[in-house]
Length: 462
Image 1: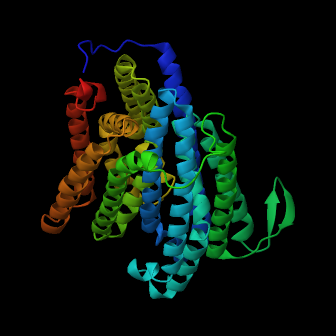
Image 2: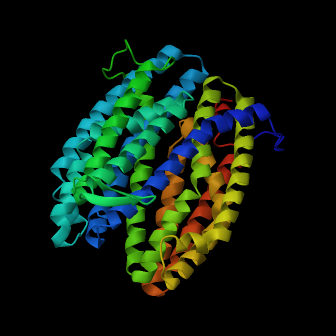
Image 3: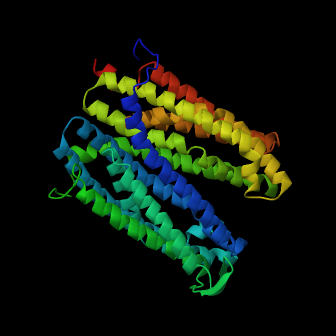
């Protein structure tokens, strides 16, 4: 920590931060919007369809978490290489990311397809829809190699400061998904637009059509982002070996492994948290589900800034520029706090309206609005922890976020919710209160860690 903690606005750095952050924000906004549309389109088929699709969501989190963690390892390494001007080393790392895509893609394809009939049973899906859920899961994970390419190559490009390409690929994937949903889910039907009626072709594949639409969009996205990586001026892996390179893989895996464990533990925590809330009854479950969906849109500024923080911190470390690293830390936390205050204020004001978009039940709307307004107050604090975690990822320090998140998720949120729901017989508000305490604890731990300078690699060397 430097002696001067006053935030001096450096407009050049502000421009750089937003140049990296806004494409990620837009990409996540599009993903959230498509998630809303996807849910509505599948939901129109009936409760059975929603249940069949939703039964595999948790497994999806676990698989994506593992692949994303590998991406974080390459992000940290490549960002530092480019910051130090070591372009050839960055390209060698990019070639190793190709190996990571191939290995993880093949591994998870074999694993998920071989377990597709068992996953719905493990998730305790109703027997009547287990077969449908298994077919949906099988189709969705058939193009796992391409999904791994989207995740890992997207992170590799962000490490090189290119956040626009992953954004454009993500938007295209979502557009293809929605368009094919429209064609593959529904039967042939008559549509009327602006008074003009016409017959619209449809494959009438239902839930399997939704899975096929997603699968095709993943293939398209995987191909396009692979082409983008191989054409990139700074990190193209052309001409470099994809055979295992210990010099690169060792530091990448050292960063990736704690991040992978963190994401696994967090995903399992969400499962445990949701199962306890489900025991509270239909109203609480509906309010929680919708509030979670609404809340996710208001975290978009935070995660956009996290991407910028990770990339720029890695660049500063590679360039051995301690002054820039400190300036970045102060500036990005200041910007993040302002954005999350605005986001939290909007969420607090419009909570009832947002709930009413997804439910007409007055009890669900009222309960959801209460918990959303509670969490809105904690958003600026959570935003700080998101940014510091992003900087630590860029610096290759993923063990600290792993420890902090395990303490928060399992030591506070899960234990607290279990006590409130099981022993004190309290409702949804108490569960979300535990979640907010979890967020505030993360803020406190990350802030102390930063103020004491434990995050600073230059201080360690000194």
